[in-house]
Length: 356
Image (cartoon, rainbow, N blue to C red):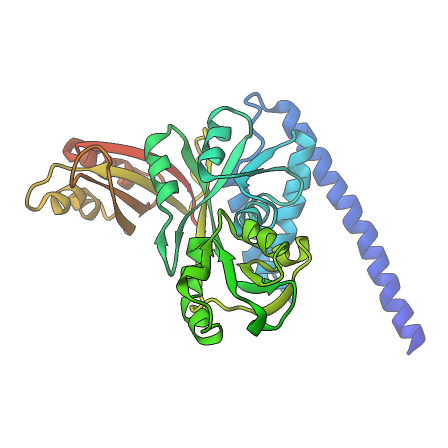
C-alpha cells in the first residue's frame, strides 16, 4: 500500500509540474495579446463566456462544472492582471454579497473598491475612478433593487455582464444565545428575505428592533460592538468581524438568488448566448404596452423580464425595464428594436451581454 500511494503521489507531482508549465504558457500568451490590443480593454465578457461554456461542455468529470468554472475564472483573472491591472467597485464594506458577486465574476486578481452606497459605485465608474462596478438589480424573493434601477435610467453607463448569486443568510452575534439578542441589524432586503425565520425563532424581538443597515457587512460591524445585537449577513462577514454563527441558511426561500449586473462604458460583442436589457416608455393610452411590445413577437424575440418603475418625471408616469433574449446586433433583435423605437416615447438600450 505505501508503494502504491507513493506512485500515485508521484503521478500527481508530475501532473502539477505539467499544469504549471501550461498555465505559465497561457499567461505568456495573455501578455502578448495585451501588447497587440489597441483599445486597452482587457476584460472581454463575450470571450470569457465562450471559454467557460466550452470548458463545461468538454468536462469529463469528476470535477463539477461549477468548480471548473471557478477554477478557470481564477486562471483568467490572473492572466488578465498580467495584461493590465483592473479595478472593480461594489457596495461595501468587505463581506457584502456584492463583493462576493464581484469576485465570482472577475476572480481575485483585481483591485476591489468598497463603496458606501450604490450611487457611489455608479459615480466611480462614470468618473473613470474604476474600470467596472457591480450592483444588485433584483432578488428572486423581494424583487427589484429600486436605486440600481433608477440609476441605470439616469446615467449613461451600460450593462456588460450579469451574475446570478445564490444568497444564503446567516444570523451572527458575539454569542450564540438567541434569548440574549434584543435587536437585529441587516440590509432591508435581507430582513425581508428572513421575515418568517425571525418571527419563528426570535419572537421576543419587536419589529422596531429589526434595524436597517446600509449593507449586510455594515450590520455585522454594528453587531460586533453590541453584545445584545445580532446581524444577518454572509458567512464571510462573520469571519471578518469576529462574530459567532448563531444560525445558518435562515432565508425563507432556499432558492433565494440575487441578480447583479456589471456596469461600465464598454460595449460587448456577440457571445452566442446573450441577453439585452432595455428601458422604455410609451404614451398612456389603451393597449399601449401591447402595441409597444408587438415587434418582439413579430420577430420571434423572447422576453424574460418586464418590470415597471415610476419615471420620476410626472405623476403616474412609468418606465419599463425589459430583458430580451439575444444580442442587439442579432438580426431578429435588431429588427424588433427598430420596431419598438418607432413606437416608443423613450428607448434606452442598457446593453447586450452574455446570459448566465
